[in-house]
Length: 72
Image (cartoon, rainbow, N blue to C red; front, side, top):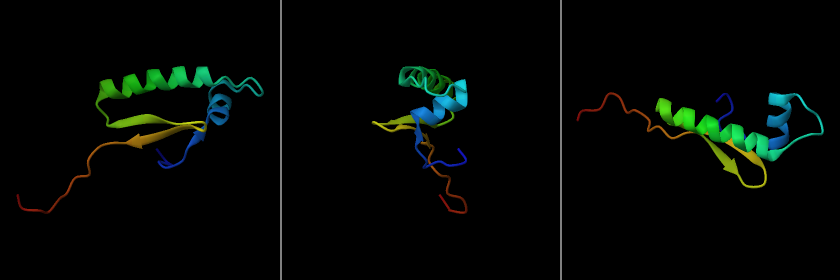
């Protein structure tokens, strides 16, 4: 979430998680993202992982911003 608009490539994610150069498998990253989405949903965080076709994944926050100081 430090870079919320950044799209992380499948190769970058594979290298970061498995530390394996040259053996990037998109399916590994997609499987991990699927489990992460499920856990984030169970926690009710409003944060999810979104696939960017042909590029990689991006973390997004779907929570609605709070408006303070308004009468209502």
